[in-house]
Amino acid sequence: MSKKHPIISVTGSSGAGTSTVKDTFDQIFRREEIKAVSIEGDAFHRFNRADMRAELVRRRDSGDETFSHFSYEANELGELERVFREYGDTGNGRSRHYVHDAEEAERHGVPPGEFTAWAPFAQDTDLLFYEGLHGSVVNEDVNLPKYADLKIGVVPVINLEWIQKIHRDRASRGYSTEAVTDTILRRMHAYAHCICPQFTETDINFQRVPMVDTSNPFIARWIPTPDESLVVIRFRNPRGIDFPYLTSMISGSWMSRANSIVIPGNKQDLAMQLILTPLIERLVTNARKLRD
Image: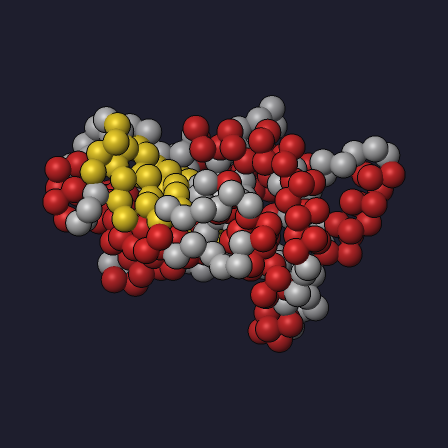
């Protein structure tokens, strides 16, 4: 952690909804006039799209059916740790962009499935914001949580996560349900061993729970809406969290445990604004004082 150059890390798997959470953070940054540099977990994949396909074939031929983007070895986690460490020390660093589709290709001038060149961060930023798969990894090689000042987990119950991924990949990437299902199954080992352990390291977890039947996510015709969901918000350290204030401000909310509050799904953005704004303001205000 760095008091002068704070880092916020949002972790969630594919289909978890981290992009929506990023929109909420962007609103807070704009409203509070915070200059943030944002980096994506996809920028730290080890392989471009063609090389990843080749690596998958090589792994399958060798008997490994579990390799995926969730796997530690499919990502440059050492480079991500170096970026966290450098930013915390100096406020500098670099990143790149993984180009997903034709629209992004036109914007970045790089074919889909490729990376842009590494580029330095803008100068004089207030904080670093990371959103991706591996923002709180602790293993033999890296310890990312020790560099992040605020760690957020986005963790829908798994059937909902699968439904969101299936619908997203079919709609935006043209994949069949069968192809997405194969990806989900291949990722299960790494999901259990590389993704889930991170949520014990996060400071706050947001877990959406649908209140409709999702027992067979592979045939679900639509994604459960926020109005059909609850969100469980868990604080690793509830000290200093004003739960009476939160439950009074968020209609229909209640505490389920001493460190958890349950809210209606359509109140998640409001809850994030209420919870995160003072935490972010404190980080930035203290950092600015120390840098002046």
